Length: 457
Image (cartoon, rainbow, N blue to C red):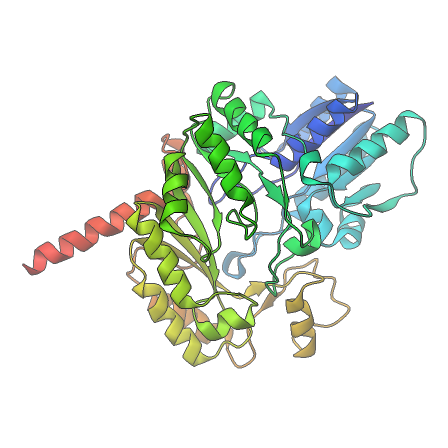
C-alpha cells in the first residue's frame, strides 16, 4: 500500500523540532513492505496547496496525519493548532477518497473529541508503528475498520521500537532552521506528576531501546545528515532504571561525540555520571523543576524538593553545562505566600535560565483534571478540546500576572512570559547558532554580572 504521512505540526517556537514520530511510523511501514512517503507541513510553508500537489503526485492509498500538540500550553499567548489540521483534512477530501487516519501524541490525549473536530475517518490511539502497519496490512486485503478510534491493547517492547526513517529533505529543513536532530532512547514514564499525560500515552514502565540501535541512529544523523546537535526527546532522560547510561556508554565505546541536550529530572545524578555524559557531548540540559516551592512541588506529585533543584543546577554548573528551568505558577496548593517565596527561589539560582509559565494546561485523564472538577473549576462534561488552565483557588489571575511581571522585571535570565525571547532565539538559529542556546543566555548573564561587579569596584 502507498501511504502518505503528513506531519501537521505548526509550532516553530522556541525552536523547530523534527517530526520524529512520523519518521518512526514510516520506518515501520517500510519494514512491513509498504511504500511510505513523508510530508512536513512546516517545511512546505503550511501550504494546503502543496498537500494537494503531493497527493496528485504520489496517489496514496492511505493518508496518515500526525498531530504532536493541540495547542502551545501558554495561557499568556494561547495558540490553537487544530484549525490547521481541519484545513488539511478538508483539502484532502477535495483531492482523494483515500481514508484519512490521524494519530500522534497530541491526538491520543483526547482522541474522540479531536477526531470529531477535524473530520478524519479513523484515529489511532497509542503507538502508530504497530497500529498503522496493521491498518495498512488489512487495507491491502480490502479490510477496513468502522470509522472511529482504533486502540492498542498494550505497548511495544523497547527493542521493537524502530529507528526513525529520517527523510533527507525534511531533515535538511529542520537542521537549517535550528540545527537540532531528534532521537528517542526510551518510552514510558514512572512518575505521577498530576498534570502530565505521559504515563497515559506511554505507560508507567520504562521501555528502553537497544543502546546499539540508538547509537546507530546518532551515527546516521552525523554521517548521512551532517547533524551537529542532538536532542534526546525522552520525557525524562535520566530514568531511575539507569538505561540512559547504557546509551552514553555505547556512544563512548564508539567514540561518538556530538553536542546534545535532553530533559532531566533534578535527582539521581552525580559528578561521575555528568562527566561521562559530558565526554559524549552533553552541552545543555532542560530541568523539569515545574514548581518553585516545596509545597507546590509536593502538590504536583514531585518526588524532589527545591533543595534538590538547587543541588542539580549547581552540579551541572560545576561541569560547565548550561541549564534551563521551567516553572508553573498557580499550581494546586499555591498561595500568595508560595508565589512570593517561589519568586525568590528562582531568582536565587545561579548560572541558569528560567522560563516562567502562568497556570497549567489541564489535560484529560490526569489527576489535575480531577482536582479541577472537585474544586469546581471545571465541569465533568468539558472535553478540554479548548484550552483550560488551572490556577489555584484564591489566586487571582490579574494579581498573579502583575506579580510575576514585576517580580521578574529586569532579570534577564528569568523569562516571563515564557515566549518573550522566541523571536531572538529563532533569529540566532537562522544565523547558524546551533542547539538550545541556553548556554548563550547563561553566558550573557554571567557577563552582565561581571560588568556590575566591575562598576562597583
